[in-house]
Length: 180
Image 1: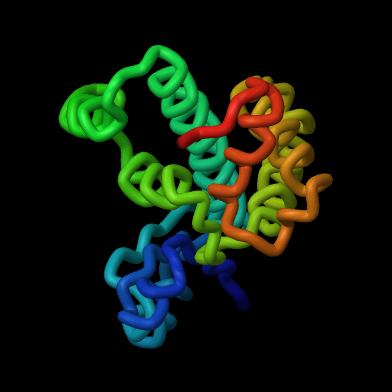
Image 2: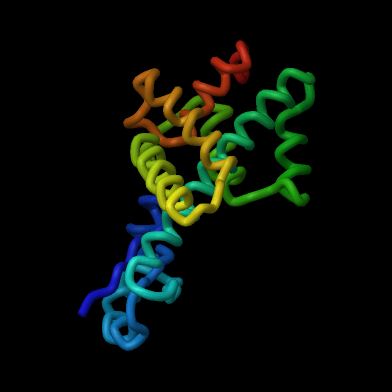
């Protein structure tokens, strides 16, 4: 009798006990474990049978990686066009282009401050595992494949121990310009 219960959320959310926990396994086992899980998380989601908690986590992380790459590219395009990046982020944050990733990673990218909340090497591992699962299921995930390549490029620059926002360093290399 077991469940899988991976989490999502940064180190501050772990310290605050406000993680989101994705649980795979029998519902009755989740209910038995719920009091313990509630000590760590504020949102506990039953994702289906055993293993599905991990699958949901991997898909979520791959989507976050793809979104982070898109945010970094948007910042580079905005800078190249000479627009005020504060204005760009205010508008996109209030519009359909906004995201939690943008709120969390754009400031770190702009400051080139990659204090790790979730290490780039760990994100790369999760994206690779997600793509393996997607391939086994016959479901392409091109945005995640593209993110994997950018993460690999950043890791090859020795940034694996930094926050995955450091993918910006690879994007800057691809663009031939530095975000200032």
